[in-house]
Image (cartoon, rainbow, N blue to C red):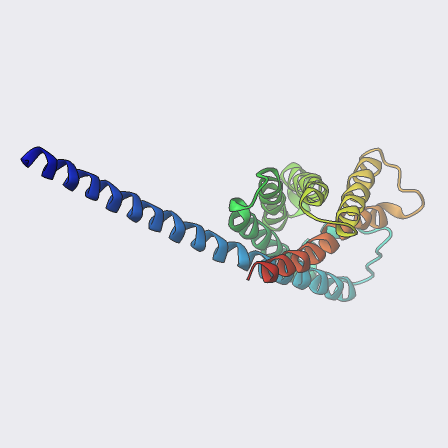
Length: 218
């Protein structure tokens, strides 16, 4: 009789343990989902403020030319504080969003976003006057930003999927052309914008798409 009682007690404790573990897993998943819901806001704020302050820095930089001046020229001189602060915020927002999206299907996207974010942060921390560290940082931001845009198409439906692929392809193609010193008449500044702008556009559109998906799941 005692054996039966012990067996019943063990089974009851096991059921309680399973229930508690299930509650913990559910709570953890809800926490991850709430975190992922913040990702669109981070991407939208980060990309929007960088785009606006980039334009402001171009206007304030004496004699600046979008055709002949590199984007990173804005990171030295009178506009250094504006540009470097803005791109660090941009990169930090991308990195934070990547971390929050880690629970979503497909691990490649948050990894690429994280590397792109780190690259952008380092661009602001290492201005072009430092040479190699700056150029490696820019290459990392551009390369992984373009890849992230293409990879994100696997999670989206048409027409967003096609748009994300096109934006990523433009970035990567322009990056190859810039490295090969082929500016197609746009100048190095113009070609660099063909690399950077699609990434900014992608982050803004992708943020809107993520926000829409979050609303569908509510």
